[in-house]
Length: 60
Image 1 (tube, one colour):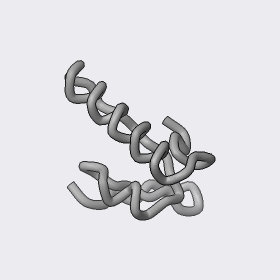
Image 2 (cartoon, one colour):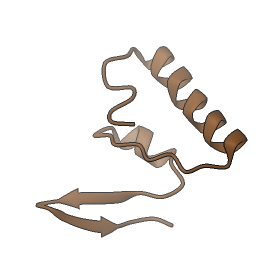
Image 3 (cartoon, one colour):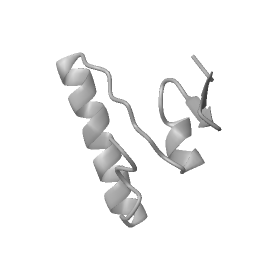
Image 4 (cartoon, helix red, strand yellow):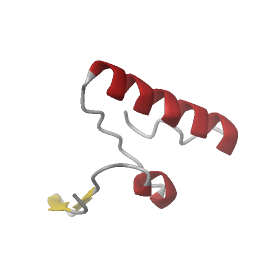
């Protein structure tokens, strides 16, 4: 999901993120979320950063 909460107010953004997590868990899939929001990124299980075309693996 590319910036799934970017244009939403905080309450709606939280609801969308919780929905993505719920779908991911129920279906046993991986969700890839692209965001510039560090608070949203911290809620993810793994964080990687793309900088100048180089992918840096982050937290496990």
